[in-house]
Every structure is written in structure tokens, then in C-alpha cells.
Image (tube, rainbow over all chains, first blue to last red; front, side, top):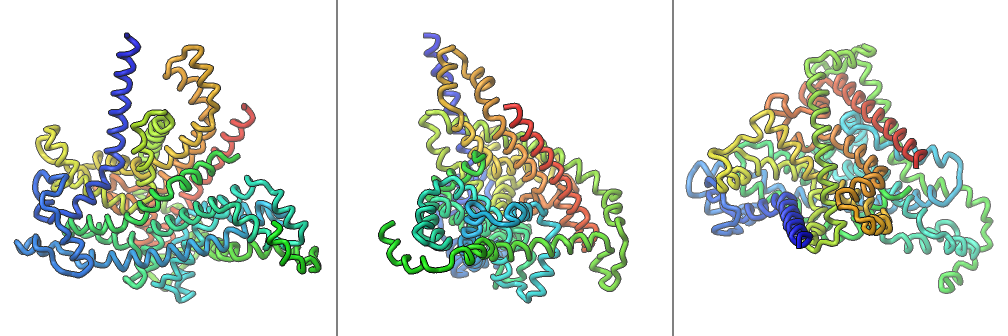
Amino acid sequence: MRTNTYKIIESIFLNLLVVILIIYIAGPFLWVMSASFQGENELLKKPASFIPENPTTDNYRYVFTGQVPTSYEVTGQLRSRISQEARLIAPALKNSFIIALSVLVINLLFATPAAYAFARLRWKYRTGIYNFILGSRLMPAMAIAIPYYVIIQSLKLMNTHLSLILVHSALTIPFSIWFLTLYITSIPRDMEEAGLVDGCTYFQVLQKIVVPMIMPGLVAASAFAFMASYNEFLFARFLTTSIVSQTGPVIISSISGNPDVSYSLISVCLTLAMIPPILLAITMRKWLTEGLSSTITFR
Amino acid sequence: MSATSTPLEKLRATPRPFFERFYPYGFILPALLIIGLFTIYPVLYALRISAFQYVLTKPNSHPFIGFKNFEDVVTSYYFKTALINTSVYTIASVAGVILFGLLVALLLNSKNRSVNVLKIIILLPWAIPAVVAGLMWKWILNSDFGIFNAVLYSLGAIDSYIPFLADPNLAKLSLILAHIWKEGPLAAIFLLAGLQLIPNEYYEAAKIDGGSSLSVFRFITLPLLRPILLVVLVYETMTAILTFDLVYVLTGGGPGDATSLISWFAYAEIFKSLNLGTGIALSIIIALITLVLIFLYMRALRTEDTIS
């Protein structure tokens, strides 16, 4: 009887803990999404309501078409809170996508053969170059910000997609190489040896035998590279000067600096910016979790 | 294999040893070129600038001043503040992240059915950009219209709205709370991976011996989790020391200098005071601090290995 009561109390306590954690983790997301469907006049009430009382898609319509939501036309003061900047989020996210997808492709093309060379082939300077590539990530971003600016300027690439594609690739490839090297080391090599005996070149072995075997690893590496580029802020902040190449985080940060901006519009921008990574994180949960886990459990 | 071996037959005749020698170099060359360009030049450039006076408001005078920039940084009004703020922030947020991660990992590792939702949402804060997380929290904690204030007010916990980001101590706490929210999930995934490495037999043996769940955690889980815990600890320490995006969006280093961390001061020197020399000198100091930490971590891991 005593153990039974104890068990019930324990289970109540555990479930309560889980609920609190879920509110802490998911609450901010749900609130921002909910707020993006509320009019500004509703949001500025005290206290604000978590669930929209008069749900509206006006805020989204404004961001995509420029049609001012009706809730702003009520008073002049609210009108001034409309921020043109919010309308930049759609092109900014398009830039983010172009850059992140290019970075993903470059990571796969550059990191896969390099990882294969580190994991399987024996050659001079192998350890030295491996350490150099991994060590390159130890430079603090702030120290290399100015030199990066100088490089991009002398390549005449300021304010272009290509500048961020290059910089983000340089920042993400070391992790991809490390991750894929661990992955390739962990798979059996009999098939590759058979391929070599059959007369395949190393490139053919990589292409026809190794790549199909490390598919899950490549999927995870792609997702990591995409997310890292999509989320990067500091370099995107000062290598871009206009909406031609500014990315989602740059626009978000500049909106956050505006003290008068409408909170409904902020919510729309935040919601739009977080949809891609959320979809990725949910649909690819298994690969991401396994990929992350393997980086820490590998010895 | 048989399907692919036929077309490859004719390649057998190629003089293998000669070509093979160049394959590894060909494989690494593209990656090495791009990483080399964005590593060697920036490091040399940064080292050079740190030894010159480089103030953008004086564009035509860059005299060599040796270690004067480093001297200026160390004796500056902000250096002590930066070290204190960053240390407090690092200790508090790393402790928070590890506790959060451990708690979530233990829950996810239990057979409890209620954790399924947690399993799905745990990666979300990790997946979104830090500036998005920062702006989300900035608005949630807003002193006039924030939902956190609204919830506390509706529950009757407070009489009037609290200015979370305007009070120095509350702003620090808010920054740490947002940091734990953003970084805790990764720690949870890492620690969960560590928990899953512990063989089930240990737990079964403890069950037979009648150990309570607390003593199982204390005498089985914790010691076996140590190596992973150590790696997470160091990774999270470095993440905390280098925190920048979140500060930039959430507090802007304020109120006053309350939430100005060392990276924020480096940013302010370079982009606000336009003093590249001291800004880069400060960045190099940050790099040295992290290098020392990595060195200590490598040593700790090595002793860990020799013990076990």
C-alpha cells in the first residue's frame, strides 16, 4: 500500500515536470505564432490574451502584399507602428534559402571526398592537414570579422550571395569533414576492398560504394550545414548592405533594434523565419538526433 | 557488385600506382583551398592589425605600436566588467544548461509515455537562429505588453508589470534563461546519447540489490556518464563565453553594461568605437582564453582515460 501511494506521487511529480518543461520549450513558439494572428490593438491590451480573440491573417497579408491591416487604421498612433522593414522578411528568407542550399551542396561536394581521404587513404601530411582544418574553427568570429570583410571586398563580392556562400562554406566544411570522417571510419571496409580489387579507382569506390553506404550521414551533414548557414548572423550582418543579399537573421535583428515596430509584424517575421528550421527539425528528427549523438559517443 | 563490375573492366589497364598517389590530394584540395583562404590570411591579418594603431576615424595613420593595443585593453575601464560579466554568465548558464540537459535526458531515457511530446519538440530551440530566439524572448519579457508579465499578472503572482530587461539583475537572469532555452536541448541530446551507452545490466543489478532511484543515479548513472558530461561541460563553456547573437538582440549589452559580455565589448570596439586594433586584440585574448580551456579539457579527458 505504501509503495503504491509513493508510486502515484512520483508519477504525478514526473508528469508535472514534463508539463512544465513542455511549456518552457514550446510556449515561446506557440505564443509568437498565436500573436502573429492577432491585431496590434489586441496585443497591446493589458494583460494580453494567449489565444487570439479575433484571429486575423491581416498581418501576413501586409507582409506579403503591403495592404495595411484594418486594426492599424483605427488610430494614428498605431499607424506609425507599421514598419516597412517587416516587408523585407520574405525576400530576406529567399536569400537565406539560396545561400543555405548552396552551402549545403558545396559541403557535400567538398567534404565527402575530403572525409574519405582522411578516413581511408594513407598519405603524407594527413594528420597535420586534418588538425589544421578542425583547428580553423577555433578562431573567434570577432577576430576574423575584419579580415573576412577585407577578403570579400578585394574579391569585389560585397553584398552578394556568393560572399556569404563562401564564408558559410568555410565555416561549415570543417564540421562536415569531421562528422563524415567519423561516419566513414565506422562502416565496414570489405566492400571497398572488393571494389579496388575489381579495378575501381578511389573515386569510383567513393561514388559507387561509400556514398550509398553513408547516406544517413550525408543527410545529417546536409541538414547541419543548411541550418548553420540559415542561422548565421554575425558575418551576414556586415557582409551585406541591402536586401539584395541580406538574410533572415539580419532583417530580424534590425527589426529588433526598432523600438516602435508593431509586435504583430514582429511575430509574423519570427514565425516565417522559424518555419523552415522547425520543419527540418521535426521531419528529420531521427537523423539529426542520431548524427548529434554519434559526434559525442564516438571514441 | 556484379552489375557495376562489368563497365569498370576496361579501367583495369590504367597504371594504378601512378594515379593513386594523387587521389588523396585531389580529394582534399577543394575543401582545403576554401578553408585555407579563410583561415591563414585572416589569422595573419588579425595578428598584424593587433600590433598597429588602427582607428578608422584616423584613416591615414597606422603606426606600429607593438603590444600597446593589448595593454590598452587590459587597462581599459571595461576589461574587468567584461571578465566579471562573462564569468558570472558562463558559470550560471553552464550550470543551468547541464541541469536542464540532465533532467530532460533522464526523462527522455525513462519509459514514461508522457515524454513523447518532449521528444518531438526538444530539438526546436536548437534549430532556430539565435537572433530569432533572442527577439522572441525580448518580446515575451517586454515590460509593457509581454506575455510573461501578462501570465504572471493574470495568475495574481504580481501586482504590476515587471521591467525584466530594464533592471540589471533581472536582465542578466533573462539572458541566462533565454540561453538555457536555446542551448539546453543540445546538451540534452548529448547526455541522452551518453545515458544510452550505459549497459542495462548495471541497472538490473542495482534493482536486484534494491537500490533507490536516487542512489542508482548517484552511484551508477553519474560516474558512467562522467566522460560525456565533461565533453558537454567544455562545449557549453565555450558556447557561453562566445555568446554574442543573443546579447545583440535581447539586451544590446544593457541596461548600462549589465549584460555586456566579452564578445560584445570586442564588437563594440570594432564596430562602434571603430578601433580595430584594440577590438582585434580583445578577440585574440578571447581566443587565448578558449584555447587554455580546450587544453585543460584535453588533459582532464586524458586523466579520465588513464583512470578507467
